[in-house]
Length: 147
Image (cartoon, rainbow, N blue to C red; front, side, top):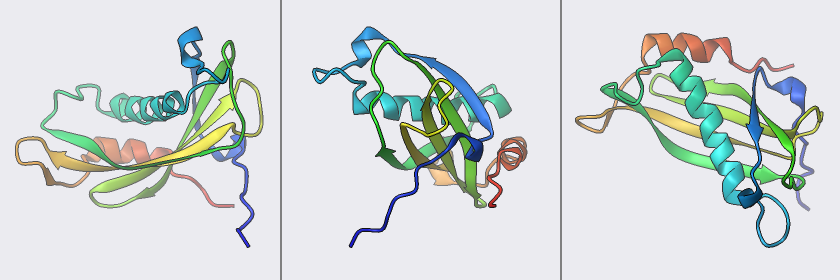
């Protein structure tokens, strides 16, 4: 028997951004296409990284996505105001797992949620390197606190 799935809720995220849906985000079924949810998640994570290292992507050390996972709970359709919730779930020496919840504006339960794992690499060699200190400090500020 499948394990019951817990629905992500707003209080489990620490940083929020507003996203605007567009008419073209809807698919032929009348709801936002799955690829758009993934784009929202990628944008939430990338913007958090850039907040702590504004020179990205021109830096010699960059984050590279190595894993993405997204779970859907309910549909969102245009027009709707959407918020992405961001948190850091785990920090390693060279990688980080960031969680993102996607909410209709003001809703308590996420319409979708997932995570992305990024490894930091030296651009010239494509070799894994430690997460830069100022980015690490920013990530630590958003580290999820288990309750």
